[in-house]
Amino acid sequence: MPITMKMKSAAASEHHARLLLSAWNSGDLRRLQDTLTHSAISGEPAGWPLTGEDERERLEMLVTIADAMRNWLRRGGIAPTEDLQVSVKLLRHLAGIESLWREKRGLGRGN
Image (cartoon, rainbow, N blue to C red; front, side):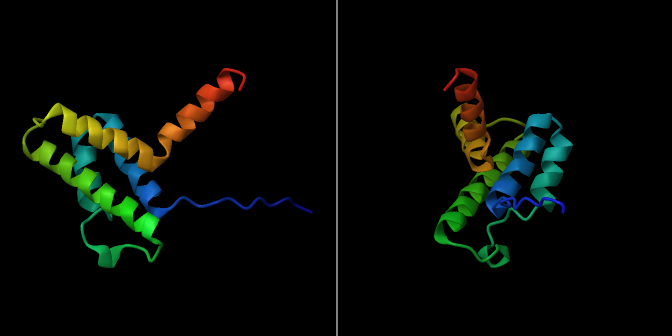
C-alpha cells in the first residue's frame, strides 16, 4: 500500500510573494516587469481568493510591495534605497524565506 503524505499548500500571498521574489532575485528586469504585469498581484480585492483577515492583510502588503517595484521600474531603477530595502525584506517575509533561513541557521548550530 503506498504511503501518502498530506502537504499543506501555500497561501495565495506566499505563492505570489515567492514568484515576485524569484523574479526580483533573478536580476532580469524584463522578467520582473512580466511578473508584475501578468501576476494576480493587483489592488483589486475582488480577484483575491476568499480567505481570512490575515491572508487579506498579507495580500494588501503584497500589492503595496508590487506597486513600489513598479514605481522603481518606471523611474529607471531609481528609488529611495530605504523604501526598496523595506519592500524586499517584507517580500522575503511574505514568501516565508526568512523563517526557512532562520530554521536552517538554527539547525546548523545544533539547536
